[in-house]
Length: 84
Ligand SMILES: [Zn+2]
Image 1 (cartoon, rainbow, N blue to C red):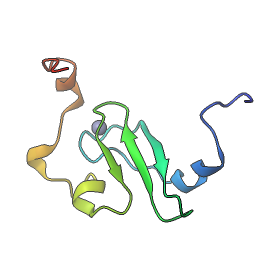
Image 2 (image 1 turned 60 degrees about the vertical axis):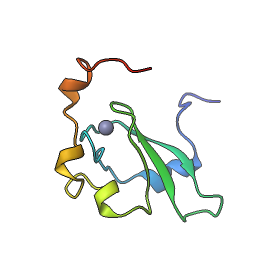
Image 3 (image 1 turned 30 degrees about the horizontal axis):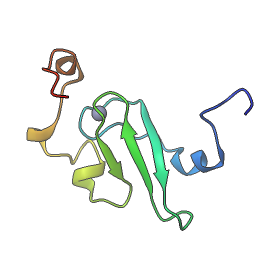
Image 4 (image 1 turned 90 degrees about the horizontal axis):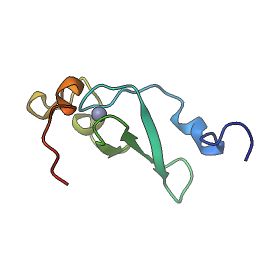
């Protein structure tokens, strides 16, 4: 409905720009929200499909704290073997 199909009232809770913890891509979408408004949101990276809930620890939600051994280089994703 309207000119902005991806916009809705819940997006205001996702206004803070936070890159993907795993690949640091900035195209991150909110994919779910707590049934109790304001408790948490779930975000998903549109580059590597990592998904996380806002209430998870920094090691799962913040690029600077995400374990180095699990980080992904977006340039390597396009060359990775397809598993599914
Ligand atoms: Zn990512």
